[in-house]
Amino acid sequence: MKARQVDVVIVGGGMVGLALACALKETGLAVVVLERAEAAPRLSLGRDCRVSAIVAGTVQMLRGIGVWEYIGRHAQPIAGMRIFDGQRFGSIRFEAEEAAMEELGFLVENSVLSAAMMQVVHDSEHIEWCCPASVDSVVWKASHVEVVLDDGRVLHTPLVVGADGGNSWLRSQAGIQVWSHRFMQRGIVATVKPQFGHRGVAYQRFLSTGPLAMLPMTDGLCSIVWSADDAEADRLMALDDATFLAELQLAFGPQLGLIQEVGERAAFPLRSQLAKHMVRPRLALIGDAAHQVHPLAGLGVNLGIRDAMSLAQEISDAKRFREDYGSMDVLSRMRNNRMPDVLAVMGGMEGFHHLFTSDLPGVAALRDAGMRIVGNAGALKHLLMRRATGLSLNLPKQIS
Ligand SMILES: Cc1cc2nc3c(=O)[nH]c(=O)nc-3n(C[C@H](O)[C@H](O)[C@H](O)COP(=O)(O)OP(=O)(O)OC[C@H]3O[C@@H](n4cnc5c(N)ncnc54)[C@H](O)[C@@H]3O)c2cc1C
Image 1 (spheres, rainbow, N blue to C red):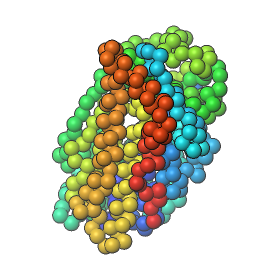
Image 2 (image 1 turned 180 degrees about the vertical axis):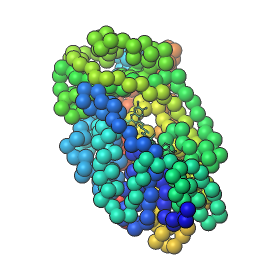
Image 3 (image 1 turned 180 degrees about the horizontal axis):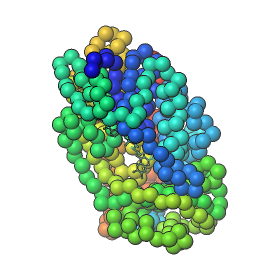
């Protein structure tokens, strides 16, 4: 079959691959997104049980690429956060107004975010959405990549992007190894209905078995992410709803009154993973294909969207200056821009995980002291909030 020339091929149409396509829409480049299967949401009390806390810096980016306007009222503003040390009595609170912000971010169902991005993709004449589509083979040449689809179509492109998730097929085709650490934990997710209104507060309780997050959704509902060791997660998943609710109540505490209802539960294995190379000539990995972090701070997709924005900016600049955006000169600029952020978040999540799951007396005292210091030091707290919401990062808010 005759090969077709396109400008960028994105393998994987999850939230990160779609974000890159949306960010490239104003560049006029012909972008093809290959997605093997559209994900159907797993419903829990009628809501997608997969949700994302989208921090304020990412919201600015999604506004800049035209996605946020399609999310609108489906997002729940996060006005504050409460972090509790479940083994001791330490706690810390963050309020958006302390950092002169309207909100720290928003809680959005993944299916809502993907649908908003799909709307932008459909509105653009330069983006082609191919689904279901799988890649049969990729051949790396000096001047281009030959991408052969399983239906026999052949695409030639200066750049192929792997946004195909933690088990990236493209990454292994390129022979890129990963550093991987499985926490031997799973994250149990579900929608719950508490008795009292959450007032936009996100709760994170660090238990000795792992963190339990209670995240505010629209209509007074909450989404839980309960991380627990594999055996404990199996046990919790096997409980009937009433017993699960009773255990959840005990683990979470009385802050929101009685937790009255729980929907369908799902469990996801948790790992931390980093690709040994984020870029190669004519290849860039973004999102979970490049790095995976523990969901305790809810930053995985935020990191991926930052990758997408950084890559889109480099592609756009290179096009303007007639540079080859598949070259290592251009791609290594994106990698150098992204690695400090990725490593800081990965290191921070590992540190948090170990700090809060340890019951050694010295470590517990360190936790208490750390929480007290951060809680009482306004400037430090302010700095942490700006960093955690991605507002202090030097990343583009829109691409033209
Ligand atoms: C329990 C849990 C809670 C989380 N909560 C948060 C949170 O609150 N905030 C946050 O920022 N992050 C959170 N995360 C992390 C976040 O979900 C991921 O970082 C994010 O989904 C990664 O998006 P992605 O597009 O890179 O990968 P994926 O979502 O894995 O998408 C990859 C896509 O590629 C497709 N694909 C795969 N292989 C191929 C192929 N060969 N050909 C074509 N297509 C292919 C797949 O079908 C899929 O659509 C959480 C994760 C977990 C497990």
